[in-house]
Image (cartoon, rainbow, N blue to C red; front, side, top):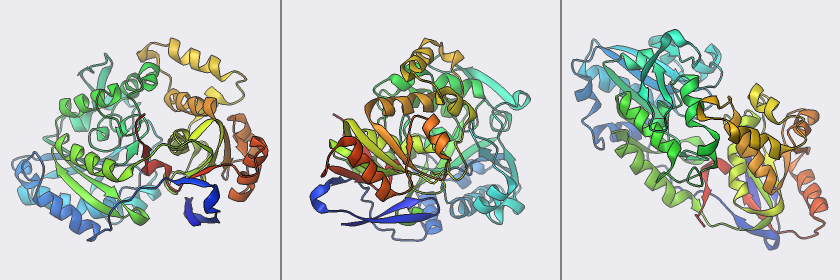
Amino acid sequence: MALRFPYGRGEILADFSEEDVVGVLDARLPEVDAPAEALVRRALAEPLGAPRLSELARGKRNVVVIVSDHTRPVPSRAILPPMLEEIRRGNPGAEVTLLVATGCHRASTEGELREKLGAIYDREKVVVHDCDDEANLVDLGTLPSGGAFLVNRLAAEADLLVAEGFIEPHFFAGFSGGRKSVLPGICGRKTVLANHCAAFIDDPRARTGVLAGNPIHRDMLWAARRANLAFIVNVILGEGKRAAFAYAGDVEAAHAAGCAMLAAHCRVPRCASDIAVVTNGGYPLDQNLYQAVKGMTAAEAAVRPGGVILMLAGCADGVGGENFYRQIAGEADLGRVLARFRARRPEETEPDQWQSQILIRVLQKARVLLCSELPDDVVRAMHMEPVASLSAGLARAKALLRAERPKIALIPDGVSVFAEEE
């Protein structure tokens, strides 16, 4: 059995004995039947739960389009041109601003934005959101959870607010896309921290593929409505991170349709392997360790307690979060770290603690071996063990388990699948 595992901008090819493999957990999306831009145009022509974007743009001079940042593999070059055409068909004089939704990530560089947007970067006005720029945040009330809703002023004062993005399984919001363009995308840090509090991360409904009853999703949807997000265009990525499906229209209706389609193809059976081999889908999603936690949660659902997770993630951009590293690195008792997180009120949530909280949950279930470009001492400080290759990782896992023929689960893209609910 030969499988390809995305790793950085390349891939790792490996052979396995079918007798050792308990399951290959992979999304089974239908073949792409049209170029990405054609899919987007088709979706724009038949929006779900909303008028056409050109109709919404009539009489709206100040239009803000929320776009994803450099950490997301959204094919913005294919999505934005048809969106901008629709907006200007409705109002040729519209003043359009592309607002880059960084959430609490670092600002995208000019080079990263040029790579993402191509010629669009020079044709349109582009503004990068800064969650700490209080002068450019507006208070729009209180989230259902009780947190303050602080949102980018450009979005709050727009005559028309729309967004592009993509839908994939998300490890605590259920699915990405839709309402996430607003929260966390263009919110103040205080708002993001309250939404990502320890109690919500601990909630059993704050899991991959779950929207019903998910407190994080509830806050996010409320925020999108309160900010008057009027229209979205979201795609689902297939082979080679090419757009396979596109959904346009109302933030809830279009997103729900995309999530339902995705769930039908990405839900995989649970298994109890001794070793789970997983990736974060390659670049850009595996560019740092912070993001790689997402893929680890897919392996978490596929490995038995006391088993081994072998994570393949390039991490060319490093750890990806100073707080994330500081919260875990060198801490002898991870249970004590969790207790500290849980003792905080939502408004006292520390940046990155949600990622640390989830990583600790994974580490408490299984040993994690990491194949990456990170220095060995950094990997060890994060309570994982560095390995030089997939084959070296498998050999080490077998040694740790003292098993000659352990059962192995293979997850070529951990961010694209989620296990069936128990």
